[in-house]
Image (cartoon, rainbow, N blue to C red):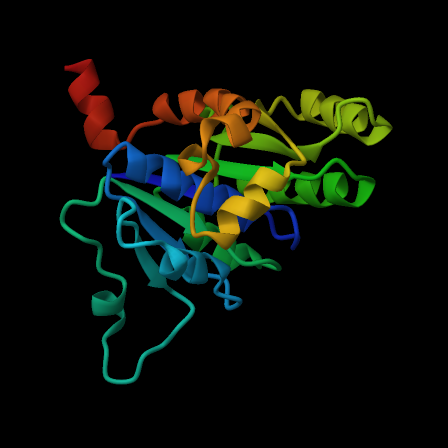
Length: 226
């Protein structure tokens, strides 16, 4: 089972948008994804609940809830057919929770907005992943998404220079598009929209999904190497 964690302790970086669109993408591939929402705002869970019954099913878990009379292990159980878990993390994670949420992750995605404040926050986040979560650059499990960008802006160039210094790959550059808002309001991902509406956005996701395909779950890696 592949585990993908979408992480940035700074709020407003687009974590939920990335997480829900990943869940949508994997549902279309019939991988029966589970979307685990750790954020008490519950945005990912609301998105799952808005999906029409005719759409490919996505199992949602509101991890932030503590249900009386229900054991934690039962609440967090995964469907037997689940092949992919996407973790939508909250803002303001401390070191212990960061380590907990990234444990056994096959891939960690850090969405970053092209602003000086966000670049600084991303720097601290990546440093924590390397130091606390014991992830090494050589493992290539950390990927950055340059999110809501306008390529001609000075801040975008600053983001690229910053990431070059860190030697962390930019796995996607996503434009600031209304397609994401439209899809979210319908309980959809951009891969489920009319092709004419979101063609450019879907194309920008190809590098991201290709990078994730190169980070399968351990069982799949072992099978491929056999």
